[in-house]
Length: 315
Image (tube, rainbow, N blue to C red; front, side, top):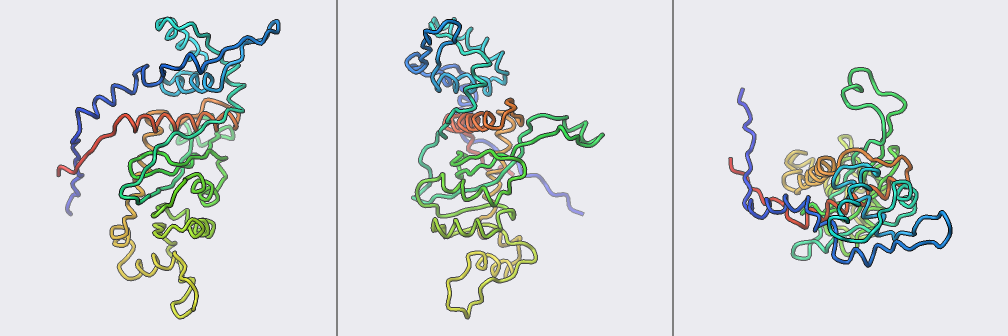
């Protein structure tokens, strides 16, 4: 029996990538020069009331906590020290203020225009983010308990790994129900959509038809049947094209020829999310978690902007 040799990869742009790795922890990346103008800690002129901070200030505190993996209380102390060392006369909102304001925080997804040669490819998938509960080891040994709670993080990325759309839902929300909302967040024409078999639902095909997505790389189920025969005078269902191709060359060959393996890029993005940011959500309230997740997506997009490895197969 032949042993399959694992492919090794080498990085072409190691100098640039090494510099981007160093910049990820640079304060200059996460604190802009105009922070003092956007902070706006104005007194309320009422005895005992706290200052009113801008949404930008609240977002900065949460962002710092996610980047440097600190809870709100520790982040408050961290930013106070940073502002003191930078000789900036800025007060930091306390943890209770950040927690209260995060519930109504509107976080816009930072992204740049993407797509080579005018072709826009979008890959979608979801993963779980833990809110609270036992760790993986205790769950494997003793089983999960009722207090183990998760949220589902749904993202759509471009081939360069940048997050184009994102949404956090309850763990019972089906991927196919969220996909139309993800695609509606993306402006411009989408040429190709890739997703796993969980998106093989009419809701997804309907939104693809509405947005005129020509190339749909979603594998049909194993027992799938042709929806519209060729002798009918109607437009062919987009799923039938993939199904006929699979019947002709096989599922494995179809994945290679159609470019379906681009879907692995979104799995890499999920791994990047859990490795760099973490697989847990710190806030307990669902609406606060949405703000936390969107800020995490913006952090990842900023990191991608700094520079990513350009690798090639060495063997």
